[in-house]
Length: 172
Image (cartoon, rainbow, N blue to C red; front, side, top):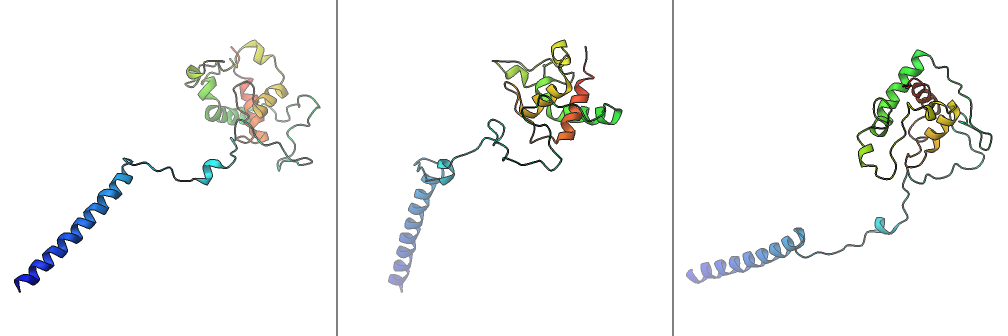
């Protein structure tokens, strides 16, 4: 009977040693002591950066809320009256999408502006911006300008016109 207990303990010791070695090998890979570069098909496929180079609009297509402007026909005219509702909506949208760069007062001193080394955001209260037509401001919001990304996918046509109406209230 003593030999049978010795055999059982030896077998448990061998099993425990094998499990400990396998566990140790597994921990080497888990904690990146031994690194393996696994093949990732997402890393080799073509990617599309949404705000930098948006896909062109398909030919002969019209957005659900109607055409924002007709290409090669100049800046559009503002179809939205600058009433209190439009300005309030534009102020809310401006606070969500524009204050990070342009600041709450629109002078170009938002929290992100400090990190922009090459070109600072425009001062929306300056005479140069306020001299622009509503359609020109709408086109800048739609297509972007310089480092400013296009916001045509973030804001609907009506929302962009509301922001234009709000920008008109940011005079010095």
